[in-house]
Length: 536
Image (cartoon, rainbow, N blue to C red; front, side):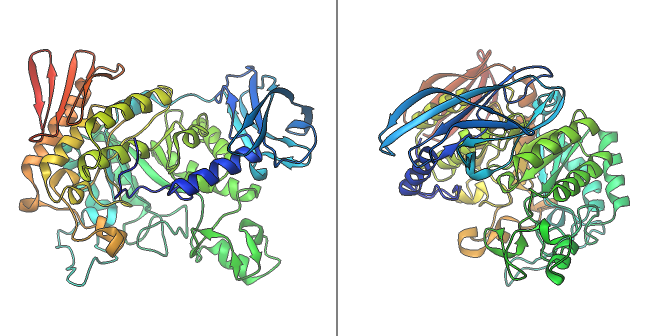
């Protein structure tokens, strides 16, 4: 299914046909591994088959793999003419003999050229899949500063546009956990709560503390204790690709050329030319090839897991190395066996699957794109949606967790896309909740929170306005979400099967439950046999 013309989920470097062709041509022309492992999550003692593809731009030489200092040749297993690169693409393979539980570091390439531009490679032996509780998760995403303050004071005015800070706190969230449960959620995901040089929290200055504007570590501990008492799980945003330019390590790295922290970052020319997150100078990239950087990040993850956190949403996962994620996964599972690790990988399904065995899964951006196109922009018909769903669900193993969402802090809210029509939002949510991935509800979506202008025109802040409370909430919409959550727990864990798909209608079944969507009206309902369980 093609992207709608107003699509706002854009994969960097793959925005149009020309960029996509250049990307594929580059991958096929050079030396590529792309974590082609089988299996990607081996048991202790289990052999792992590795593959390497070598295109016409690769240097001459023999293909090889180096596993922790032991190099051996790879065997040629095929050679195919590739018209796109106008040359032969060779395929090599080999076997890494079974290893004990732990992290295995390796590299591979041909001649003097390493695969994937020399990106460090690693996999985890003995890793387990997603925890069983994640399969039943209904996740409520909270931007703490925008959710609830503890003193009951009104949100600041925004006559001149959204404010940077609204005054929400961890204590305010703790007092509103009744609402989280009223929505039907059993898991809460918090956007970054660490001290930061930016209101949004994605410029971290200290991984081991709470932003004082949100509260203290004691407030955090009280929140965790109350969530435990209620049977709620907690997931934290974890930003590992970059830090703030005010992070003490970066300040030290720029202050003294011989500082041991200089190697924590990627300087092209010290002290002012350095790699950043999408060319934002206040977000210097971390150098994950540095052992001390990886140790610092793993220590931070363990710090929060040790305080009762149940999972991590791994921000901009492609901005860190496979080595880091392998080491973090192994350490995290040793600390908290049932922790849920899922990544933000805004990329193709094939690229997301490269993280199989490192993460439990990835946020489902392709599904969000499809649902926003069908029910938000309304530029794709339901026959196209049905074809997409059939192919999309077949592309991922059932063990790969795919948390779904309609909107989030980086996207215009779904209600805004529908022009304020809550009926279309209900239909989209009904579809989301009856598909396989654990559904995520972005705070406020369930009570009619929208925005005043698109983030394309006014910035991300417009999709991050403060929560609606009291009479400002859409009570009917909230009741519908509560019914959706109850329905979600009643749906059998079996594969979805398309029954009918045409331009304006789509019907699919999971066990005895049938979902019927119709864009005329519009309308949607869920049946169990002849009984109607829910109407949108």
